[in-house]
Length: 340
Image 1 (cartoon, rainbow, N blue to C red):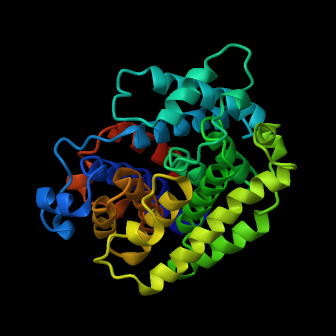
Image 2 (spheres, helix red, strand yellow):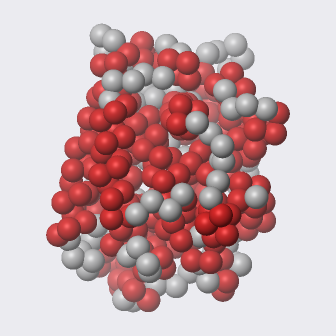
């Protein structure tokens, strides 16, 4: 790990930014932009709600983060070591009385099926769902230090597959974790989309059987390579749109009109990245732009916050905001562990 990564506290920055974006976008989700502007005033002046309550996006991020901490405390991150702690954390989240923040149906259904004794987790996976619930929570995989590329990719796809088994959900989660890792390590944002496209091409036909088992057989594909390539191809298509948008779109335009509304995995990744890339050095403006969108505003903003926080570090977020966020202690504990 570089000195820069330690000094800027990328993990703390990313987790805090994710939660802040989530809280800022919570009241605006399901609203169109004129309604948001009527309620909140000019989007560049949006204020963090009081209290700063988050959604299932942050709750599931913390669940995944706790599971990863459990695994790495015990030893090496492998699929065998990871599956049960993540499964247990997701089930606990689903049962929690605090799970009352309009969670997605895919997560609820899969978590209920994950409780069935003796059932392979692949049977619980919702193979037809590529909702953004898989990649809104994947940032911790990009923040755990010391992972190999294979561990990071496998873990990102496995945590997705426990609920969202569609190949695009797997690929988008992998890309999201990869982007968080690159930004935490100080990658130049201007070259980020190109690096993500290269990564997608390099991995297009790679099915992580060690991590996913026979998940692919639940779909209608002739081979595992065909299965996963479908997901990477959809991600490559949206990255092409993103690359064009970064050069041409006005910051005053609703980003959802360009890269999609974010209800599905690849669009959440692209629109969250677009908001970050439009305002690389203005993290609060990036969050506000993401929250003032016609789509899945909380998930778009939580991804934008994770990207901005990974790149800029913990000091990106002003104390009057960061100190008020729900689950602050849990976020700081995980961040401190991975920044150490």
